[in-house]
Image (cartoon, rainbow, N blue to C red; front, side):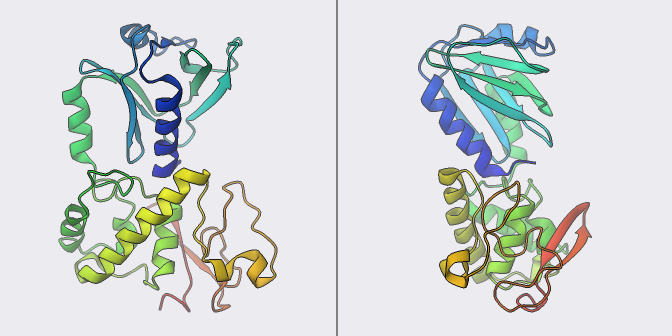
Length: 268
């Protein structure tokens, strides 16, 4: 599932290409046809993201809400428009580009109150200027669940997924089993600040990089990581491999239905 930086990156792209101008919105697949007709030909006011949710705002009464889920994807192309390939849920056509959406978990048109209700259910997003990290910390302190599980709870912290969760815990030598109500204010502030930096970089470059300069392939004389997710990471999907810092074998286990990765040496 795409993490929050991907949705913010898409929001910025769609803002740049479509905002301030009328947009043709259709549903070649047909499943979104009735809703698409509500915004077709209207001016896109802005595109924004909160966590893993994307919002195309056409007005207070018409906001296209998209959650990509596990298999949803956007494809971006310059004009001219070509015939649809596959099951295209939503197609946007502007003055210079067109965008196809396939396979989202959610794609619907909401009003501002319905969007506000979605955002109220979400925790603060490290990539939003209006984020209040204290809200997440208050919820963490009330919980006896592990910090590793809490960081993935979108009601506590919006936009963080499995990669950022594993990597930020490693970067600060935090054992994944640390219980929420034992997390110090100092540790939480450090984790939040690091997530802001890491996720902003993810928006900028389009992939997740969490490895510090001294542990990059060139500095260590090692081969670059080969993985469809791209980027250099410390522990995510590196189970059985030696830790880049201490050499201990990276471990993995299932936690709340997701694979957790950590280094027993660096995260005792």
